[in-house]
Image (cartoon, one colour):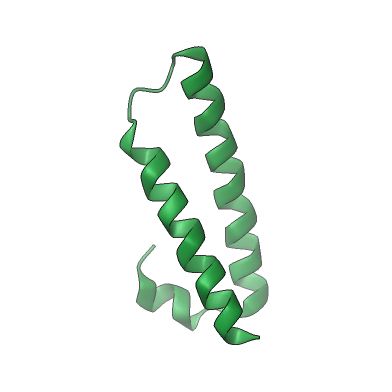
Length: 61
């Protein structure tokens, strides 16, 4: 998701998106542990997007 789209969301929507990203991150970690992860760049993308969402949430409070 682009930063412009994230800035337009409310704090509740950002919290929901954060939970979804954390679930995706957990899933990717489990895939890596079992050797099933083929797109290793996805973990980096998710980790960075989590940081972006947390930064925006901090600014909205």
